[in-house]
Length: 328
Ligand code: MLT
Image (cartoon, rainbow, N blue to C red; front, side):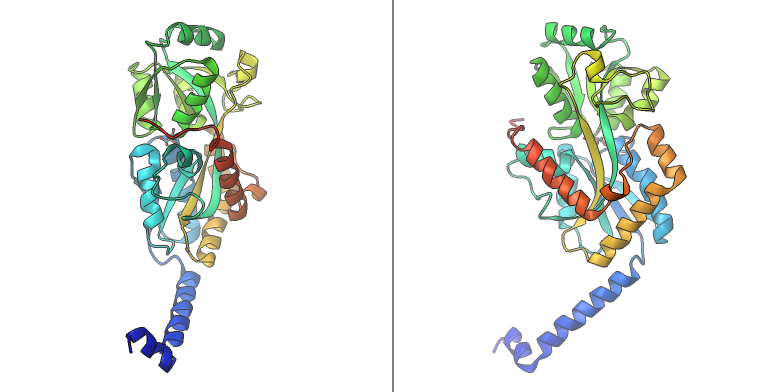
């Protein structure tokens, strides 16, 4: 008789299983008892990193333990996301995913090593991030109409920075480029933090990036901004026209960043993390920092794990028919 049958015959297996369940549930009630790691799937200093650091600093106070940010770069965030999917599901390894890692990458990478819905427990949406059309400071076009004419006339010469195939910056500019029927040279970086440095340094021509990464540079006069791709202007940049006002109403794009845990992370752990994230989003200091950078703070009904699961599902349904498997 093998060990499994022997344990079953003596009733020990059932006892072991229920002991394990009690131990897991006790661990979940005590959670957290040590430092938590938040994987950020892009370079430090970019929008996902900045949003994660602002919110997790407050969450750590609520939870009574530090949250360490670990930037794991590569393949538009999919390397880190695959790693997070395989991490222990005990609440001590989390990831800030976004519209790219948890939606757009699915149709783009046929061999993606994780499934955004099947391999993760959604925890909380942290911020909506409108997309802006940006260019280096000395890029010749003065406004969006001139930009459109210029990139169409110079499509073989201009280049566009992005954070890898499937990243928010890549997918947003693919949408823009297809509307304009242009094929600029793509210049990939490990995140739009380093891509922004290249834009400021004049090494790349233009970029479609999340507002959080752009507000300080626009206000500092180190880059040009042509339009924000949302129906309304953003209070952090009141003088920046919408794409509709600037002459390209069809270009609408807004991304989002959210926390996920590996599938099977216990419900009480998810509930504690969700409550800590919601508390952070209600904190005046956190709100001010996020709003000053142009983020859209989710309303309470949008902060639940169920709302995030529905968002991921709808974003996969939105992007899957539009994006084809990447050839590069
Ligand atoms: C980043 O944090 O670098 C961005 O979220 C990258 C992107 O998806 O464009």
